[in-house]
Length: 107
Length: 115
Image (cartoon, rainbow over all chains, first blue to last red; front, side, top):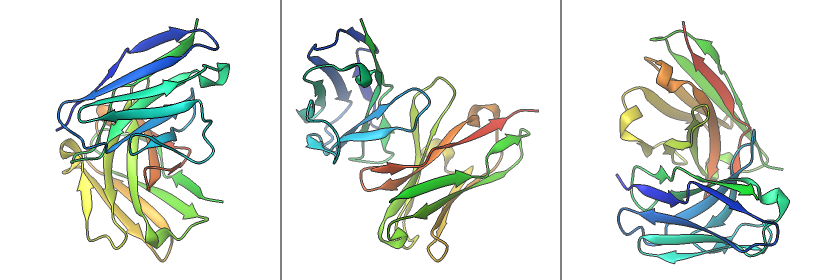
């Protein structure tokens, strides 16, 4: 199975900060990676698909990048409503797997 | 409007079975793969599996392959998850999602396995 390691587990940042979340796969996943945002008590929401494609309706402050085994979700200017847990998810080879998540908090 | 509504959850005793449903509307259900994801209390997301449009391909995470069965009824626009031999480790919120990059999710249904 492909292991997805997200770092850091918890991130504290201030409104307006540029925030970078990392996701590392245990083997090459050929950009077959999505990012999901889950706010407390809600279902996950798709933010970014296939590494760097912004889902419809998602603010442009969110962006994704990466290749091979290393992927990044960037929030260019953190907003209060971005407080959530963020998960990466690979579907390059089965079984598909999620990372353990990064919990983003306001400082 | 795309809607996915799970049902069938609740309290179940260890060792028993339970079948979840996911009613889909607002899109052409038989054009999409569908999947199930679960989340234990306070934990992260776990991919359970997925099913293709005509049920000819069903993929599972290995640890659940012998316990869970995914199926669908395209005439009824409904996805199912049959769960057997349930244990406390299966206590979780269960989500169905449309597999176009999991672009739509249901609200989730809670399953609690306890005596």
